[in-house]
Structures are given as structure tokens and as C-alpha cells.
Picture: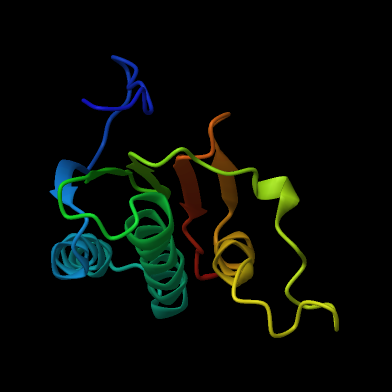
Length: 151
């Protein structure tokens, strides 16, 4: 493991566990995303939740590849996904020097409406139940709680 990501408790019961290191390649990232979405489909998640996970994970992967690793194919992306009956937890780490998410401009203000940065993190936060970054800013942890259909 390249980065100190989520530590699994011995009592955790996951329906699906995915732990991969890939090159900074969008085609490989797409494969990771496709496998994750297939698992959500197999567990009969609601389409709106699958869309949310899709959008947030795609943003995080693209950020790791382009901003974190500078699209350098010699650098790696570490992806860890854990899925249980109620949530999916996704961690994506890159080899970049990181960033301070609190320093991102608000892309919804008129001063930054055309700025090229900040939208991806804003979307991740809007679509996921929880989004956190490590202290260095090169690992993002996202959790999506499964929406339940009322009986």
C-alpha cells in the first residue's frame, strides 16, 4: 500500500472490497469506475445514488490524475473501495504534493464563476454524504450513504 488509507476493523463486514493501484491513465480510471458502478447495480442501489457516486468518483479520479500526478504515467493512483449494505466508502490517493481544499475559491461566486478550479471538489461535496482530505491533501475519502426507498 502506497498511502496510509482507511484501516479495516476485524469486525467490518464488506460485501465488496476493491484495492487497486493504477497508473495515472484515464482509461484505467474508467475501468475502476465501471467495476464500482457494476457493484452498486448488483446491490440494487437507486439510480440517483449511483449517479452521485459516479460523478464524485470520476471527479476525484480526474483530479488525482491531472492535478495530483500531472498526468505522469509513471505516477500511481491508489483506489480503495468498500461497500456494505448501507454505504460505499471510496478513497483515492495520488503521488502529488497535495493541496489545501479550504483554499479553493468558491466556484459559484461571480469572481470565480469562470475559474478552472474548485468545481470538482464542490460537486464531490454536493453529491456524497461525506468528503474528507488527508492533511497533505493528496488523499480524498468519500462516503455515500445508501438512500432507502420508503415502504
